[in-house]
Image (tube, rainbow, N blue to C red; front, side):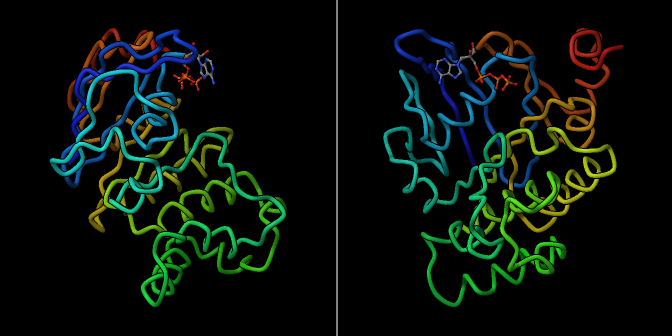
Length: 233
Ligand code: ATP
């Protein structure tokens, strides 16, 4: 579904991603792990088009997308739930969700809204509340719900469990597994590497802008280097 081919990205001509290649197959959950500053967020932002690529190619469903603006990538089926949630605080929960559907008008969006509310019932209860009044976990659900409103084929999630209590981390990752069951492909960046690799079909380890390891979630969980560097064991 997604092929990243020797992709490099720079900020002000300082390269932070160096020739990254990876792929995500339809129906997979793929986890991307790595320490702070490795370039995980930059990679996700380059895939969704918020950050331009310096060189290399990104193919989605066989077509080059790396020159397309972000909103066109959304229309093609790529949704990005960004690091830090970035919900619109003064707007209601429901208005935040509608904003996620701006590329998809009409009846289909009403059905999407109902689907998001059935995935996250607490958002239905709080539909008229200002987003900034929600707890951290609820805001995370809102950010994911907003991304789902675009009816994505590929959902990109940046640190969905950041700052959440362990019970909520499990709840969010259960939703990710459920979304996979519903046919959505997921590329997941997680600080919580063990939890992410446990639900992932495959994973990649990014270190200082380079992919240094790839494998199935289970194999990476057992890899001594991964355990030492990212799992604290
Ligand atoms: P974290 O887990 O801390 O979010 P990360 O793996 O997502 O880390 P990035 O945020 O992608 O890493 O950062 C990769 C590198 O790019 C770091 O050296 C960072 O300082 C630098 N960087 C990130 N954003 C910018 C920016 N807007 N301008 C300049 N440099 C940046």
